[in-house]
Every structure is written in C-alpha cells, then in structure tokens.
Amino acid sequence: MSEAADLKARQEAFLRAILDEGAPLPEDWTNRQAAGLAVYRGNYRSALVGALESTFERTARYVGESAFKQASAHHAITHPPAGWTIDEVGIGFDATCAQLFAKNPEVADLAWLEWTMLQVATGPDVEPFGPGAFAEATGGFGDEDWMELRLEFQARSSARIVETNLTILWKALEEASDLDRPDPRLAEPQGCLVWREGERPTFQLLAPDAVTAFTAMQDGAAYGEIVTTFAGSDPEPEQVQDAAMRAGALLGEWLKEGLVVGLKT
Amino acid sequence: MTQHHDPIRPFGGFGLGLRKTHYDDFLAGPGEAGVPVDFAEVISENYMVEGGRQLRVLEQVRERFPVILHGVSMSIGSAGGLDTDHLEKLKRLERRIDPLWVSDHLCWTRTSAHNSHDLLPMPLTEAALSAVCANIDQAQDHLGRAMLFENPSSYLTFPEDDLSEWEFMAEMTRRTGCYLLLDVNNIYVSARNHGFAAEDYLAGLPLERIRQIHLAGHDPATPERDIIIDTHDRKVADGVWDLYAKAIAMLPHPVATMIERDEHIPPIAELLAELDRARGIADEALVPA
Image 1 (tube, rainbow over the protein chains, first blue to last red):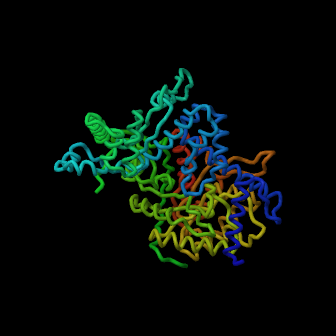
Image 2 (cartoon, rainbow over the protein chains, first blue to last red; image 1 turned 45 degrees about the vertical axis):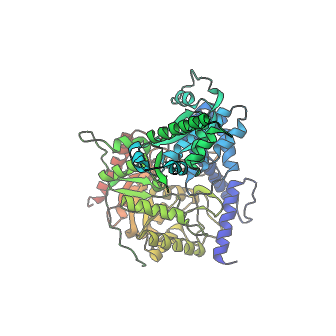
Image 3 (tube, chains in turn orange, purple; image 1 turned 120 degrees about the vertical axis):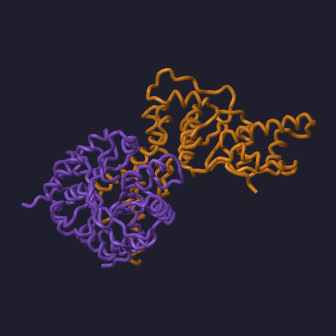
C-alpha cells in the first residue's frame, strides 16, 4: 500500500471509530489514545446535536429537552452527515420525528416547517415577477398559450399537506414559555406553503388543492393541466369555468406573494 | 520557499468573531456607539450560501470593517483530496467579500463517505505532510491567493508521528508559501495534553509567517478526565494570556489578534474587555525594555 493510500485508510478507520463506539482501535494504540478518541467522539455527537437544536428550536421546545436530545442523538447516529455544511444534519429530521413521535404528527410537521424555513432563508436573492410584469408578459396570450404556461417559482419554496395548525403552533412556540400551548391538531389536513418575502421566510396554511397545484407546477406542469385537474373527469362547462377561476385565483395569489420569479419558455 | 501568490502583508489590528447575537452591535448606525475593533472574522461556511439576510449582513459589516474568512470545513489534511464544491463556494464568497485573508485549520474533517464536523488530528508524518501540501497548493491556486492555516488543539497523538507539530507547520509553510494563524489557546491545550513545552512550539515556528493570533477559552482537566478541551465557551485563561505575551514579544512584526467565542456568547462589552487586555499586552511588548 502506498503512503497516501495508507493515510486514507487510517483516516477512514479513525472516522469509523468516531461514528461507531464498537469499532476496533488500532493495535498500537494505548489508553492515552483511547481517551483522546473519546473526546473526539463526544465532540462529534455534541456538534451534531447542537446543530439540530439550533435548526429545530421550536421542535425542541415543543417536545421538551430530554425527548429532543434522544431524537437528535438517534438522528445523528442513523444519518451521519457527509456534506461540508453541518446544517445538512437536519436533512430528513422530519422523517425521524415522524418515526419517533408517530402518535404526534404535529412534531414532524413542525420539524418540516423549521427545516424548510431555514432552506428558504438562505436561498438565492431573486426579484419576484410581479403582477405588472406578468400582465405585460402575457398580454398577447391566446388560449393555447395560457394552457401551456409554465411558471418558475422562488427557489426552495416548498409545500406539503400537514395535519397541524402550524400558524397557531409557530406563534405559541415563539417564546420559551410552555404555558397556554394550544392543541395544534387540525380537524382536516391542510396545505402549508413556505416561501420568502424579501429576506423573511414565511408560510401560510391553505386548501390542500392549492398545495397540489403548486407542487405540480413547481415540478413543471402547465397551467392548463392544473385547470384540467381542478375540473375533474368528464366535466360540465360550468365545472371547467369554475376550475379556470380557481386556478386563476391561485395564480393571482402566487404573483401577489412574490412566489413567481419568471415564466418558463 | 515556494511563493506563487502575492504576499500577505502584516496587519496589526484587534478584532472579534462576528456572531449572530452581535449583528446589531456591528451594524450600529450613525450616531450610535460602534464596535471598536479593527476587523471582524467570520466562519466562512456560515456565509457560503446563495443569498438571504445573513449574507446581506456580512456585506454591510464589510462596508464598515475589514473581514477575515475563517473556515472550518476545508479538510486540508484529507488524504482523499479537497471537496471541490466547498472550494468553489468559498471562492465565490471570497470574490464577494474581498477579505483581508482566508484561513482554515491544519486538520482533516471528512472522508469521502462522512464528515465529522470536527477538527481531527493529523498524523505528523511525511506522508501526511505531502497530502497537506498538495491540498494547500490546490486551495491556494483555486483561490488565487495565499492562505493562513491554524494550529489545531488535539487530544491524541499517533504512534507513527515522526515530526513535532511545529516542525510539520514550518515545513508546510516552506513548501507551500502559506501563512500561519497562531491559536495560542490551542498551543496551551495541546502542550498540556501531550506534555511538550509551549515555548518550544513557539520557538520552532517560522514566526515571520504568522499573520494572526486567536485567543479563546478552554475546559480544564478534571480528576475524571486528564485532558484539556478547547471549548471557546468562556474567558481566556490566565495561562493563555501569559503565553500570548510571550508570543507577541517574539514576533518580528505586528499581527491581527482576536478573541474567539462560539458558545455561551456574552454581551459584546465582555469580549471587548478581553480584547482590551490583549491590546494592553501587545502595547507592553512593543515598549523597549
């Protein structure tokens, strides 16, 4: 083995020993090296747990310190990070919460929201395509152009169906106090849309079909496909009219909120 | 001495690390008391993002102060080479901020599979030195400028070591033309953990290559744990101040000194008081005997 390959193998073994307390230590190590390795193991875990605590402040506040520490330690062990930014340890934490707090879906909803807000906060600074610019760009559109219209949304904006009144829960968890915490469960699932207003991440609860439409268009669907989806199968003309109105209303909202940053050609 | 890039001129100021909790202090408006520092240092990776408030704040701070980019994730000691995505994003930030200089640590943090997000110790061998120097060459060429590398604190040494850390660093600067960021607390911690004299460390370094000093707090050894841990969560210890005084008196030119605090971050006045203590020590060192 070349010296470079040997160094690489030793680094891989060292990191394995940090990640896995059962990994064997090199034969020529003494208690002194084992004690030093214990410090690195402790540093590794506390750094990841600390990063999760800082990203998921509200989730931590909601479930309590002890439960959060257990969940974050479990996540750090099952999802060892690979990327250069420690923030990445938060990837998939909502799924970990869904698994660990299965009877409390609001925990996973809250973790998803905190993660998404963080992603949106550091996304690219792009000027929104406002209603005026949109009107100008689409002024000459015929029916076919409208049906084929595709939108480019703010990078990292995201939406999903939630079972939690995140508006109430988010506000209630603003402060460290756990007094007067409302029951956050919704009677029916709703959609939650996350985006950035200027530099400020924000979110809104809305009808589930609005999330379906947003996600579909974000994935490249045309405006006409949204109208068709809303109209349902074999629609009456009135239903098509209603569907077009519904899609138009959503488009107006997205433009007003600055979610649209361009038209896809 | 290899020197492919413009030399980094000595800069003799006193500064602090920019932390979120102190943003308002650093961005004080006209008529408000500003932060009396000569520079601000930021953790590069915190600002290697696409946009948003954090980046705008940094740009505003840059309008008021010289800024140093100090990285924690370059992993200059990785035998598997550098992460080109990290390097490219660092370059983008460097172009945007035009920093006084760019620094990172003499350590490794990752393999191709995982990242420890900790500053892991290098074996002090010729093979490790070759890997480090090749990576430094790549990083400096990519950034188009010489960098500073900081001595880490460490909690173990390797049986195969055949150099002292100061010999390793001296040879590293000689081969690559890089500069040094001297963390006095880290020397204190490693000296205590590994049983060498901190003064030997200082005496063995190419002092003319030092451009910056870090001062920070550490967690002392306990009856259960005979290892000092570099924590950045408390005041600088007296023993570290004494070592700082020795270091500053040995240096052939002024250097930038800063207080590093990353946990339990106090109001800025407390850090400024520590910075004043550093100023006083440096002033005394400059008074002819």
